[in-house]
Amino acid sequence: MNGRVVLSIALLSALMPTSALPATAPDLPPEAQVFAALRSNPAVSAADEHIEAQEARARRLGAGPYEWTLGLGEQNRRVRSTAEGRYTEWDVGLERTVRLPGKRDLDQQLGAAGIATARVGRGEALHEAGRSLLAMWFDWLREESAVVQWRHQRDNLTHQARALGRRVELGDAPRLERLQADAALAQAAAQLSQAEGRARVAAERLRRHHPLIALPVAVPEMPPEAVEGLADEWIETIVQHNHELGVARAESARARIIASRSDAERLPDPSFGVRLSQERSGEERLLGVSLSLPLPGEGRRADSDAALAEARASTHREAGVQRRVEAEAAALFRHAVAARSAWLGQQIAAEALTRSADLTERAWQLGEGRLAETLAARRLAHEAQLAAQSARLDAREAYWRLMLDAHRLWALDEDGHPGHPPQ
Picture 1 (cartoon, rainbow, N blue to C red):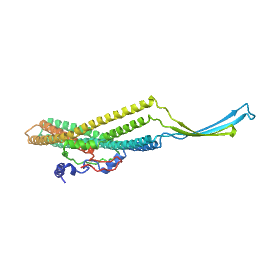
Picture 2: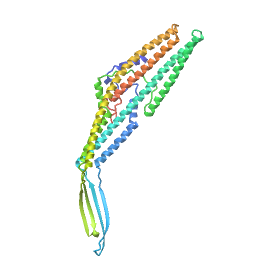
Picture 3: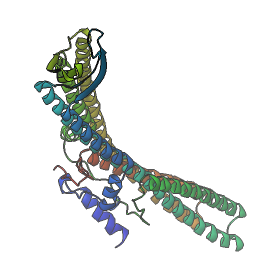
């Protein structure tokens, strides 16, 4: 299949509505590799451990903060007025503070809220890992694309220099033009070497951060898709699926439960106990029960006020996160739309300058121009092609970033399983 057919198919795919697009594309890594890479990300593994920690804390909250206290004592009594004079005595006691019923319910809610926050945090870790992978992938694509462009430029200049060398040998061209051609070729070779170095750096960074992603030998050039739908629809979808906002909401809900728990703590928990003792070497045996109740003071009121203030602060933080997420979603949508328009303009300019360079070179070959003009025209066309490729990749990345934040690309639920992209 030639390049024109591939480009025609890609252009047709760009006109498809968003809901009909596949969840991935030929210029993205395979989904199986992506899902494996995201699940094995260290931040996601840390989030897994955090969930286990919160589950353990929930069990601890369910069990309560109090345990049985066992007390043992032994003493010798000496009485001068009796014949025996000495007695061995002992006592044993068992005591426990009892959590009031309302506090137990709040502790259970607090444990469940901690688990919910941790699970949303795992979803956030998965999403951030996806953002990192997408950014590094396109960084590598940009450098690889530059390598291809510079290699093409070097090959064209090499062919031109060889042809010019033969003309100089035949006396059909001045030696100055050969020097100009050799200089242009040397510059292109140097730029190619630098581009290859940057590509190797980008590839190494991608491998180190996401070792399960295999880099392909070549990646097809796909034109950017048009973003279908209204801005408000995309913003609503992104906000709805934003994990950072979900974490803020979960933390706000947890803070409110903590405030309720601190307010309930203003009523202290009573302690009950039973005690058995023996006195005068067994002549007297005592069995008793005890009840103790702390008297609440200003400290408990201060703790309750502080927790309530923290709950209000978390509500304000949630509102701030929502505003920022909405602003970022709107900017992301506008950027994706503008990036595609910029690519169209750059592509038109690159095609026009390439045709101009071809005509200029043809005129020079026919003896109607100078080599300097040909090299300048070819350089301008090459720079335009580089700019068009960069604009194309910028638009592709912006589009897929929009899809990623809307959970239409690499959609994983909070447990790391493939989700269902919204339509």
